Length: 188
Image (cartoon, helix red, strand yellow):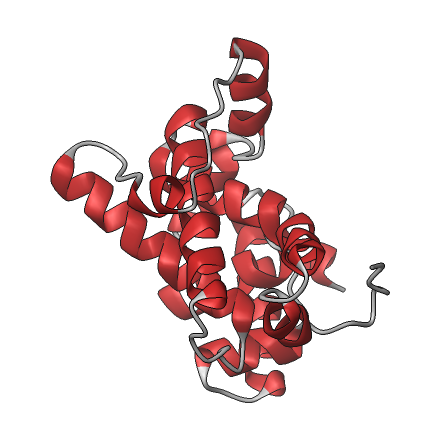
């Protein structure tokens, strides 16, 4: 089955128990963004890849078990990833229970693949500049500019209006321009 770009994530996840290709499309849509997010959090391509695989495996297991599909599936996926990240920090290793339940084999990454994943993190200076922003601006800016999320999705996740998200992104970009020495003239 083919899924047009207009199929919603929610529809894909609802179709997953009957059609594994639906979850494959959901995976393709969000793998890179989730990997980038996890690389920024862990600073390790290998750890990020393990966490990403386990987060998607847990999401797939939930879909196949008939768990209700959330209103914003990508936020749900990132929530799963955050739980996996917290668990890994507590245990000093990535749990692989969901992958094992689904009988998925572990994928051994090459050094080159790990380097490619780590490049998703971007420049360390940019990460430092982002960390200097107010938390609300940083979340909105990362979601829209780095993770390429639409304003509407971000607003739902942050529980505010789209105009508030737009203001946060705009203010965050202005602060970054100032920090980079581009000044107020660049904002015009």
